[in-house]
View (cartoon, rainbow, N blue to C red):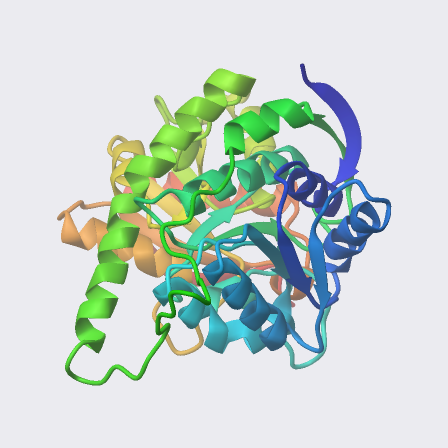
Length: 391
């Protein structure tokens, strides 16, 4: 039996974590993430959960504590944003290579300098190759749903990799929405009790993360790659079970009005909602446009994206982060690589937008759609990389 609660994006994450009966939360406050762990600390204080809440002196320490707790067999959660994620960067690699199934909420916020507390994706994109499964959500409902699924995915014996659930800072984290939540018992049944493959037992000591030079390090990373490559099977299975439970079906990507589209936009996070609204309005004027929204960014959904673009004439790739000195932003670089690998001839161009939390308006998106339609008709990309919304 489900019910509707008024929750912010941060609140939706905290509520989902509460229902998952997490053993340990170690976290440090940082805007705009703070409310996730602040609200969860209230659940601990009120006795609503039996979680060990560890207050640490930094995000580096938070992730270190999470690694240690996870290796004992505990179910573990943390959350961060921006500079906090950057401070964790060293331990992100340790967590994933030690195969710790930690779930982390990342409330996306730009990186300094200059100091800015608002949304873009530069924080997570700076750690996109850290070996974590990475999910981006459009709204608070998706944040709630993906946190529940993230624990199942991370803790699967076939995966054993940490997972980030990314939500746009302030745009989602502080906006109140109606979120359909499950009963506690339904969540417990869906997530189930963690059955750790390896635990630390004082009576059976093992070595974790030893010095590993040229003799074995390469093999360790190859196993890590294989775990990520095998994870789509588990992600699909969990998505299917969640759809049976809730009626809300997730996949690696969502497509909107792509069946007969001539041109499309692909983007991550909350911007997809605006893009879909603009696409619907333009369809009313006879313009055949569509939207592609990846939920899962790592492992990269190459197969699903290739299928979604097979009948369009052009694709505008929106990046809310820039890779300074690179030909494209991060999402566009991945898409260009996939298209080249499969010898797919598709005209693409990259749009950098929204840095430092600047809004992208429906008029901006309509202009991008119109440019994509022009590219589809002429086959000419005038600006392979452009910045929209900058003075």
